[in-house]
Image (cartoon, rainbow, N blue to C red; front, top):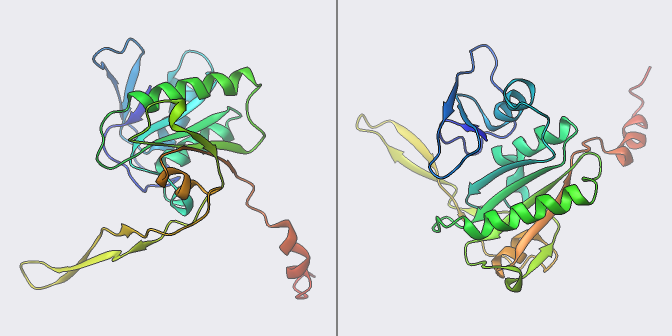
Length: 224
C-alpha cells in the first residue's frame, strides 16, 4: 500500500519534479501489509512503488478507494484515475475505485467488491491494452443483489461552481465548490447507473490520438 500523505483531490496526473519525494513507512491498524505514505501525488505513489518500494511486481494495481465519486468527465481531474492510468502505463491491469458518496465512510462493501473484481481481472488475463476500469460503488450498495452495470462515461456538470468571497482586506477571492446537476443521462452511463444505486464499471481507454481527424487536418495543407 502506497498513498499520498495528505489529500490530493483533483491533482489529475501530476508528478513531482524539482523537489524530493519523502517516503515514510506507515503502520495501519488491523492491516498486515506493508504501507508507505509519500509526499507526492497519486501518480508519484504508483511510479515510486513499482520502481523502488514493492519487493515484486504486483498482479494488479488498485487505486483508491477514493472518498466521493469519480464519474463522467470528472475522470479528467481525478488523481485516483490518474494513479490507475500510471499502473496501466507500466503494463499492469489497473482499477480506479471510488465510494460514490460524500457522506458515507463505510468502505467495507466497496472494498469487498473491488477485491472480487481484481481477482476476476487477473483470472481473465488482465485488461485490453491501454484500458483501466473506473469503478464507482454507491454508499447504499450492499452486495450483488443491489446491482452492477458496465457503463460509459457520462457528462458530469455542476452549478454554482465558484463561490465569490471577500477577504478581511476587501480583496476578492473564489472558492471552488459546485453542486452536481441532476440530469437524465441514460441507463448506459455511469452517472445514471450510480444515481440509480448500481455499481458502475467503466472501461476507460487511454488512446488520445483522434485518427479520424488526421485526414481532416492534413487537408488544411499544413504539411511540407
